[in-house]
Amino acid sequence: MEIGIGLDPTLGLNYEDQATISAESAALGYQQIWTPEGNGDDSFQLCAMRWAATRDVVPGGVGTGIGVSQAGIRTPIGFAMSAGTLSKMTGGRFILGIGSGGADIPAYRRTWGVRGSSALGLMREYVTSIRTLVSGGTVEHDGNNVRYNGAKLGINPTPNTPVYLGALGPEMVKLGGEVADGLCLNWCSPEMVASSRELADEGAARANRDPSEVKLAEYIRVCVDEDVDVARRAYARSMMGYALGQLGAPPRSYRAHFERMGFADDLRRVDEMRARQAPQDEIVDAFPAALCLAVGYFGKPEGAAAHFKKLAENLDIAIVRVVASRPGIDATRAVMQACAPSSA
Image (tube, rainbow, N blue to C red; front, side, top):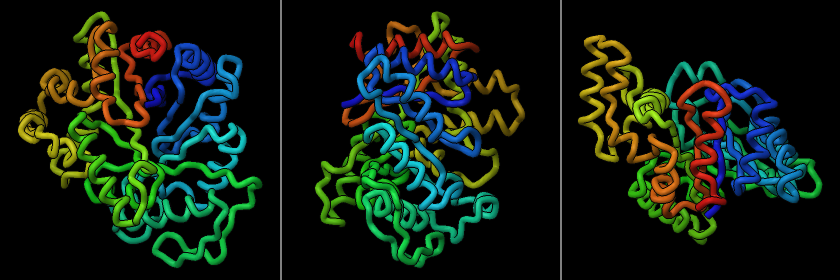
């Protein structure tokens, strides 16, 4: 298993801070640096910057990955060009993770020009097209979102970039096993990781693939502070938007994901507080700590590494996704040091 560090915009790190943290993470034994991507900073450039910052620490630099970018914000050829260039630049030390974003929401589809309403169909088209392009193949496809007639990537040598699929639901996980090089999981208990492994194997079998070819990567969020309540509240705030969704709206994939792990009643109780417009601080304090600890860690630094190791079982790539307890670079550094592979 490889251990990575995950950095995102909520940490408030400027570019200089990110370069500093990247070099320090390499010195601590982290083998990869990952980032999510929305429609803000270009994460391919962030990955290139972070990789470059590690080359004086580790020969050739550490690996980097995007987990995940949203299919609607680039075309498959756009993804393949950027991913292939970064893979070539880093000597093959790059993984592209791609997900469906809000493809199940009509407003999202209108904003980003996503056709059709099937997230599964969208991701099948994107992943198969991108994998074909970065392996030097030619794409012939006439679908809802990918319409190419003889499209080919002009990068020499062929970059052969691994393409991972962001997946939560059972059918998306199976699809990853069928068409992707790996899966980017999120907010999973060890039991959910084991279940995802079985589903990915099922998907691989229906494509006559060797299941061992399909790797599992996951963000495991960690927030540390000497004041446990400070860490708990920061962690809960980072999780609530995923777990709860919009009050009164149809449940989305993340809510269903947490309910499959047995937390439906806990989330319903928090919904009742939201419905009666309880103060936000009360809602944060009522958010179930058991759910937080089932999929990540908050607490004192000395407890982080063991909890992370337990959650990382059955993964090929376990990523310490930093949740800062307080503003400033030191909160990021504290998480990174608490889970450092070199001290394991």
